Structure formats: structure tokens, C-alpha cells
Length: 376
Ligand code: PLP
Image (cartoon, rainbow, N blue to C red; front, side, top):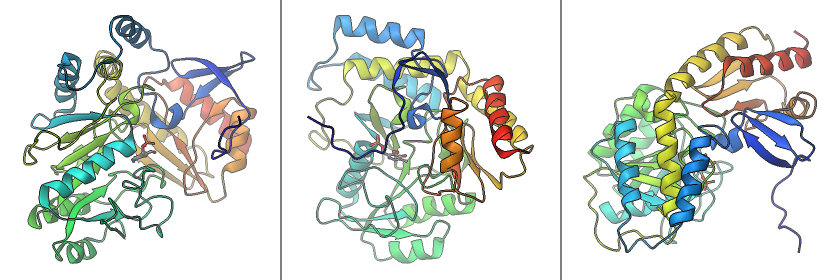
């Protein structure tokens, strides 16, 4: 049977990985500045992560959510400690799209409204419900068959207020730094304006931190740069360092009731151990600090390459924008220099989403390669 062919593939087969390096079947070493799409937070095959998951699978890998699971409580406690989101409650699921699905559903249950506002160039996943602001601004997908999504321009508070004033919007969903779209950010005034308008019009503010959360930007969540209190925070990617896990943090103004949300696999024992270990390592290795320090170093090095037109992003969620399409340059980085990087919807942008354990010498390696290719 062949695989359903939906991904263009690079001709490389990784078979093992360690920290920031990935090795193919011929033993060739690649520097991973992509982290499998911002997923690898504490480095590949971190020894503590390997041990904790191995120990847990030998004891109990899975049991149902209708029986006590102290590992979920343990994860919730660690999350509060590291994120500072102390008033929130945790619901666990398996991916980013699922986190957003649950967030949107919950918002609609909470305030009884149906419409969703998202922003052009945003990306919230690939299920029918969470899809809305996806691959291009033209897609307006229904949510739960009755829901409708309107896409607004980033930064336009007047348009947002006009839309909310109809009183039929259950949620505004936004990435405080756009990931797949190409690292665009608006102003503090805009994000704080969303927060205020949502409170005025009884609409839920959903912060999609699926890509930017878990320390990626140097803050635990990207929205924490602003004075905002999202009603729901969606998480996934870096949360499990490769083990599939997602979740939402829910503000106490939204009340739980039995049957409101549910999942078979969400919050299983292995996923909880994976994510708790990620948090332990983020703390013990001071990876938020490292993300900020290495980011500063990266920015300094980027000044030395004149063909970089813009440097975008924060922490270790970074983009290098050129005035030409980067597809060929990315291929050279992989095949000539053995460096993985990411692309975005913006064809001129290289995305850098490395493990948060990355060091200066790895950044040097990237800029040496860029210098060689760009001849500066
Ligand atoms: N939200 C954001 C901001 C994302 O970047 C992504 C994936 O790239 C998703 C949601 C969807 O996550 P998943 O692919 O785990 O369903």
C-alpha cells in the first residue's frame, strides 16, 4: 500500500537524533534548526525524557479518563508553576488542532454564540472546526456546521469592534506571533484592545499558543508580553517534545460540567510524563533564559548579512526575510551544509525554530553557511 501523498518530501531519512542533531541512515549529521516544526523543545532524546517515558510505559501506558490519573494533576501543578497562569484549569487532548477545536467549542457553549473571528494569515490547524484562518485568507470554513468564521486584518480594532457589536461572536482566536503565516506580530495596543473588546462584548479571547507556547519565545507564552487575560489558551507542539499532546488552559469564568468536553487518548499516562518532563527540563536547564540569550546572539549575527531584509519573531521563534524566494537557499542549507530550517507561507522567509537547548556555536554554524551561500 502506498502512502496518501500529501507532503512534498526532502530525500533524507532520519533514524536517530540527539539534542540539536539529527542523523540519517548513512550516519550523516544534520543541525536541526527546525525542531520538527517547533516541537522539539528540550532537545531530541533528552536522557531524562527517555528514562521517564520508558519507566512509565513499563508501568502503565494508558488508562481511561474515567479513572483517577494523578499524572494529570502533577502536570497541571508544574504548568502553573512555570507559566504563572495560576487561576486557570487544564483540559488535555492530543494535538494543536484538537486544542483549538475544544477551545472554540467551549467558547460557544459558554456564551451561546456561534461566530468566530480569526485573522488573515493566521493558522489554527487542519480540522473542519479549527481550520478557518488557514492556508489563505479566502477560506471561511464552517465550525460545527452552524458556525461561521470571519477573517479580519491584523491590527484593525475598528473592524473587530464592528464585528463584535453584532453580538453573535463566541470567540476571537489569535496567535500573538503568527507561526505558519510568517511571524507577523501586531502591537500591544492591538492585543490589549482585543482583550478589552472581548470582555465588553462577552466574547471569549482564545490565545493560540500551539506554536509559540512552552517557552518558545523566551516567555512561557507569547501573550505574556502584553497586559491581557485570555479566556482560553491553546497549547501543543513543544508541550511533549515529540510525544503527541495538546491542551487548553481555561479561565475560571468558564465553568466545567460533566460531559462538556471529552477525549479517549488526551492526558494519557505517557503524554503526561512526557510533558511534565519537558517542564522539569525547561526549569532545571533554564531554557527560557537560554531562548532569550541565544535569540539576542542570533539577532547580532544576522546584522552581518546584508541580504537579510527583515529579522522577525522573538526568542527562538525567528524568521529571516530576504527579497527573493528562499526555496533554493533552504535546499542548499540542507544538502550542502546539513542544516534543517523551516519555510512559511511567505516564500521569502526562512523560519528558525530550534530546540531551546541550542547554543551559540550552532548559530555560528548557520551564519557561516549563509555567508558562504550569499557571498557577503
Ligand atoms: N495552531 C498553530 C498556531 C499552529 O502552528 C498549528 C500547527 O502548525 C496548529 C494550531 C495545529 O496543530 P497540529 O498540527 O498539532 O494539529
